[in-house]
Length: 602
Image (cartoon, rainbow, N blue to C red):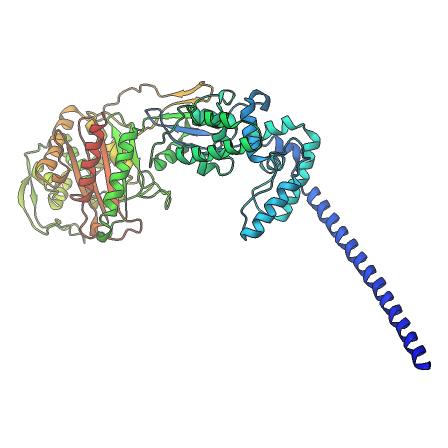
């Protein structure tokens, strides 16, 4: 009995200890829960008090858009953000609203800013996928993010997005929230809002969208850069088919209406874009404010760019450089002007994605023998004739001992022959008979904007120039001796059609005499027909000059026909020597192909 009593007593003590342990555990759990709740409340309070200023966010200014337009009306590039007029959701066809709500947030009209069902479904899908595969944000949450927050993924931003969604649901009704969404959402190619997208992709107001067009826009919301019609019409239509099927499943349209929608026509849209014109677009964009000053409205800039010439020049440059990498040539630039100085094409490099540095307008490269044209032009101005002779022989000027490229001497030669064969020694001899300041003056007046040091070596192009400047200088000859200034902007106007700028007809300024122009043109024509520029020969009239700097670091061809002037440069950004590349080969070949393409675009 005593043993049984002890066992009972021990059992009671054990139960008492277990009861105390349960109480202790319960208290710990309550304390931990209270601590978690307090921590959560503190964090929510922190998120609330670190929300952006709502009034400031609503009225936040955006960067005005600038759309660069080619001469034929096609778009080159857009800068800034493109918005259009505000369109209320009630103004849209009901099926447009239904397509967007059905695709993005089918319980939009019933939730309070947060859809627990969609959120849970998305989380389960993401867990099973092992990555972020679905989003559960409501339209209200997307408005909160687009209007007030950044796209940075963090817990804080997600909490703030939820708090703002609740605030929006309290502050606005569903139609107002939907209007905010439709006018702020990104829809590809720099376009924001349904009206801007409708105008861009279908050339019509969003009020006039048909069901298929509405489905395309709704489908773009998943991935605007992938599913917009400019990126891929086929992908856009495939995605629209998914949207229409979703609308059937959500009872917004019938199966018959879905099938009918698939046969609807699409607005013509602006399914064009000038390819490989980014360098030109950047150059124009940086010039705009010089014409109209700072502004806060969206503008269109109509330019002189010829789409056919631009695309051809870029392609020819890229293909030629790619085919000659074994000769250690990696870069190049092309500028094509008409004889008034209007820029028709500009290739500032072979790959804009890898390098935005514009070698046509920013790079400083030695022109080599292409600068000799200024020397012989100055000689003509001082009474020399193309048939006058000059010595081509050994020459020393201080420590400088120039040589011909083939290390030969040609004795007495005519000016015409010396330029045709690009003889260095004859050119230096000639320059010794001329005031070098007059050579520099000609170069300046004709368009060279970079510093020119007054040294004997300048006559062989031993200083740096810009490609666009060389094109302008030769255009002065092609233009009959009238000054040329490279320009690209013809007109600037607002999206409402109000004209802010129009290029006028400037007064012609003759800087070269007719006879001098006629003689130097004939000499440059002879360079192509009989001299170093043979690879640049065209079926008709052509005149130009090769240029190669020391150690083949720069190679040029600059010349003109009866309509266009083009300057071509190839080399390397690191100034390393090329292997056997001179102005007489790759640049001359590129120039010829570009000029033929330009002529075929007439």
